[in-house]
Image (cartoon, rainbow, N blue to C red; front, top):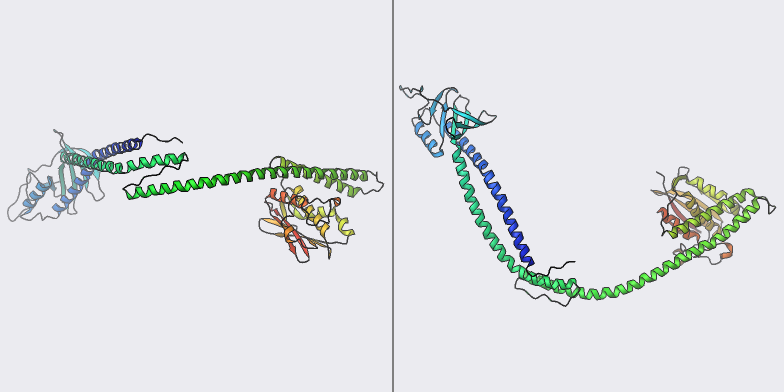
Length: 491
């Protein structure tokens, strides 16, 4: 982080910002003022001409005071008026100052009245028949803003207003407003600069203190200030410095504890990796022996032909060996494993697995029931999920007691199907039920290694279910234990 060391850098930046904003304001204000002011005054002039037309329309053309009233309107508004009746006959102009209608027995000659003949520059028509035009005299550059309107009685009015007056008024107003806004702007900048100076000096002192805090030097202390807000800020910074100093000491102590914990975790992870690798290697040896003897039985070496069951033994041995290889790969690549997912019938999968071990429960007089709907179609790695069920089923056979009953059921739990494996027998005590998912943990110490049980089955279940991101668990039921696991529904 780059620290600002020059004491006047804030002042220079503040001055630069003020100057930039001032120039931008002046440029924008000048542009709007001199470009828009003409349009504003033109709009004002148009509204004024409309008002003049309404005043004239309100007059009584037959009144004796009509001439005087018209003279006042023309003089007060600096306009030239032409009145037509009917539309094509000029009966009044400002120059003639004649009445429209005859009074008493006297008549007025209107033959000498002539309208102004000008060149049309632009025209703006309205829906009510009125219009605005810009006209220019033929032999001069003088231009006029003309408003025309005709009443239902065919009395028409045209009012002329010099555009030079509009431009002159707009220019005068623009310069007056420019001078006034410039004066106000500089007064505001002067006041802002004086007020800023009251804050910049304390900020410079606060900056020096906080720069030391950035370097973790909490020895500096901010002085008090006359300004209430800055004084509170100074006190807060001092309190923050003191708090950070104490926190740094505690943090250093916690860091030492954390380093020790991280090192301990590393050792535990290393031991766990070595443990799983050794366990996998130990499991491969009996699997290889099973395969060898199974092939010997299959080809008649033992003299007892049980080819059908030998095929099953070989198939299950391959599955177990493949599972171990996958688990070792999972360990090798830090739990990054690609599932071979597909859709399958859950009932067909489980009944197929049970048929391969039917002698185990027929010879022992075990009652087995399966209640899984045909419509349950799951999605996942069927080979790994077969291992989950086999571990549950093998565990049920090993711990069955009392009525010697095994029930396999399936229920719909929303986004997944839950498969339950219940066996009658003794419940799992509270301390064991939390640890049975750990590798080599055996709740029943009576089952020794000689029986081929190393406490790896349920840990493999946990690993496979975590790979599928699905739930699993165990519950103590009345007169038995129920293990369960979820299989994701097929799309």
